[in-house]
Image (cartoon, rainbow, N blue to C red):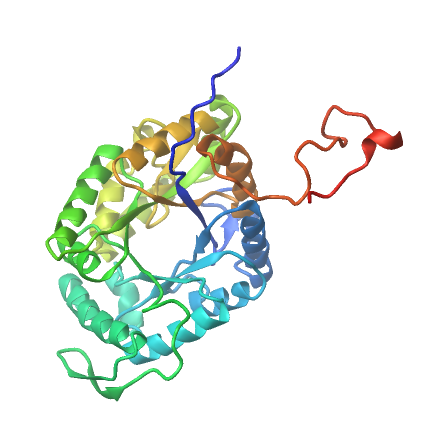
Length: 393
């Protein structure tokens, strides 16, 4: 039975991937077939996605992750086109120091730096970094931080005495490549978080909720930005399990959590509830309620990852056409960028690029050789004059 391919959208979605700086593996909740958080592996993932045509990568932040700034610096030196979305942490680092780091990495990478503003959602972890402010006050501090940071990167001499920061005659002698500064991204579901997004940032991110919930969140953020005379771009953070058949895809989803015990789920959900004050995390947990029998939360939208993982806990599961259709539904409500991931991240980056990119109309730019060449993977002539591989002009 032939399947009519879906038409690619007029404006293909921008696709990013994820560098697993907290480790990787084939199973959640198990040490079997795990890969440690080591730079040589990060390099493999980054160079693969750079070749496969992903626009950029997100590097996570936190106590369990390798430092995103140092890692991005190393990876920028061994990749060509890839952009790096790195965490900017108000409260953890001073705005002047962050401005100098920003300018330096933007220059080193040739203008491939993006900044993800992270105020933190785990007070226990924040305490380890010396941050003890309650939820909404962290965003008030971020507002003050970003005003100073933006001023310095824009070439201003900054003197200010605020509630959280005091600076006299601060300046930046080495400017960034991108003007006035690298773009700011932000993800936060609370009203306080959306106010920061509306005031300061360029791209507002959401985790993978059902389309109607994402649409409602986007409209709230868009209205807050419009009230300030600003416009936002929008992105979504999702895992992907894409296979040639629907049966294969759902089998892979089941396999991913097949070694997760009920005790692990209960402990993880308890920890998330007790330690975290993130509104986005609450919304993720509410999708499945910690129950294995409640994981399909929308068409092709599966919440199994969130049983034991904080943050992004949902995956799109299905064939390339099914997943492409779901992404077009998100695109229709305003999503322009996807930040994807999958376990393990190296292999799944290839699967997404080879299976899903064509359905989305994304040019993977994978090879400098003609796509029509004959080799052992195609039906063609081998040997003699008909088998020569010719490089594309």
